[in-house]
Structures are given as structure tokens and as C-alpha cells.
Image (cartoon, rainbow, N blue to C red; front, top):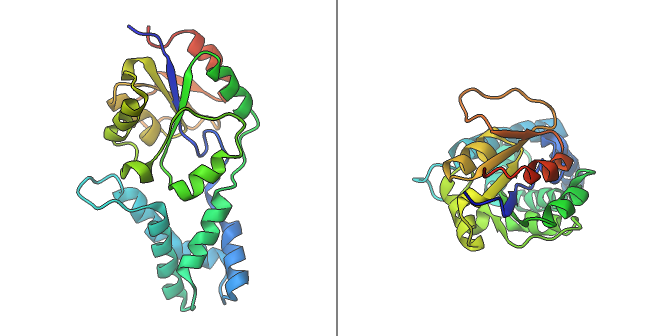
Length: 235
């Protein structure tokens, strides 16, 4: 069996910090700039149903692809309508994405990536729009051989076809490839179905979902990754 030659990373909450409610900062900015008679929490709550529907339906192959920008713009439109305020959903989404594109790396990210790069090719595959992903990558010190977003591929993790697109771009077999991510659904189930070696980064020691595949490899910090790869996961 071939050794691990390639490591593909998820982006958000794997390499950069992105707590879910961090987006409220941009909501406050939108309320201020547009002079809206609304609170941040009310505007946020109004967007959540559309965001939840987007997450629940985006992997359905029978539905047309929807970008993050389109989904969040729709959420703002619903929230503005519910709150009966005359808001600009396009501008609000642009503000949200500008904020999202500046997420800070975890303290160990750059060091860990540099160490992994000494022994493996590295690439990045993220559920993201290029509009916020690509600018955010500029905050990392280490570059990637290949970057693939869900927007480019027009599909979302955990669909195994997305991982297969990435493998094709890299010209590598799934048996020699590890995928590192923070979500058991998107980042363990997806690469497992594609024949890759998933590595679940679980910084907060969250319990496993018994309905999803159990990751063969689990780490709590990216700094554990070089040592794990040295064990040759493919054997």
C-alpha cells in the first residue's frame, strides 16, 4: 500500500478560527452603516432559518447549486422583511463576507503546515466561496499546491465526488491521501467514502456522533499532525 504523500486540509475551524456567532460583528456594522432600526440579535435570528435550510439542502444533487453569497443574501432579505426594515441585502452580504475573509489562523497553524510540507504535498479543499476564501488564505504564511472551493466545484462536502475532483486535480490516489478537518460529517464521512484517510481535528473534545463514521485518527492540535503522518497512515 502506498505511503501518505499528500495532505488536504479543510479551512474554517481547522486552519483558521471561525466561531459561528463571530459574524455578529459584521451585522452590527451593517446596522450602523444602513441606519437600521434593529438589534444585532434580531437580525441574526432572522437570518438563521435560511442558513439552516441552506446547510440541510446544499448536498442534495437534485437541487441547483447555491453559493454561500446567494444563501446569506437570501437570509438577509428574509430577516429584513421579518423585521420590517428597509435594508440592502446585497450590501449586508458584502459586509459579512469582508469580515469573514479576515479570520485569524489558529496559533499553531503556520508552524504545523510548514512541518507537514517538509514530507508531503499540501492542498486545501473547503466549503466556501472564493470571494472570502482566497483573501483569507493570504493571512497564512504557507501556500498550497492546489486550492479547491465548493464554489469552483459547484458542490459541497461531504459529497465524495468533491473529494474525487480534488484527487483528480492533484493526480494522486485516495490511498495515499489524508484529509484533515474539524467536522465529523463533512470531513470524516466525505473523505472516507472517497477512500481517503480522514484525520479529525477535535480541539474541544466533542463526543462522536454514533450515526457517522468513527475517524481512525483524531488529533486535538495541528501540531500533532507531523508525528501522526510519520507513522505512515496508509500501512
